[in-house]
Length: 168
Image (cartoon, rainbow, N blue to C red):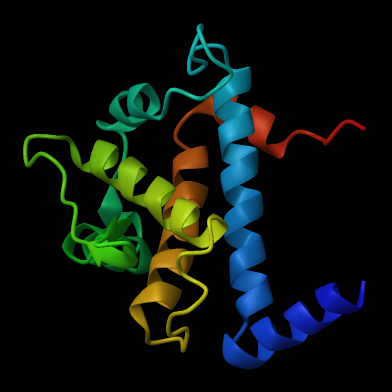
């Protein structure tokens, strides 16, 4: 318990609103994946995982980054400054720029990059970076959450499941 409290203190002292933005991303991401899997349309029939690419292609025509100014900023930032992929190089941790196929749809690219933001944070790769509100890491987290919240609204079934009560 003491370790948990100490970690919370460190996060909140080193990342402005750190606990909040991290919590928002993790909860939004988890609820989003749960909603995708429970629609059955976006459930991989061989594995208990969501079909992100299928979902992103389904919403491609309805997603409008110009719906409001903050969304346009978020989309442009993530597409122009995509999250790096953590790798090992010569036995040491490193980062590489890993861009996607230029022919992929905007929503597909965003889906891959949002998952990468979440993975980098969840697997510990981004807990040694800079998190002031103007930093790239901070912006990637907040913009990913903003986009996911917009995407929830683009599919009525995903939205219904996303907003449903959590059953014990």
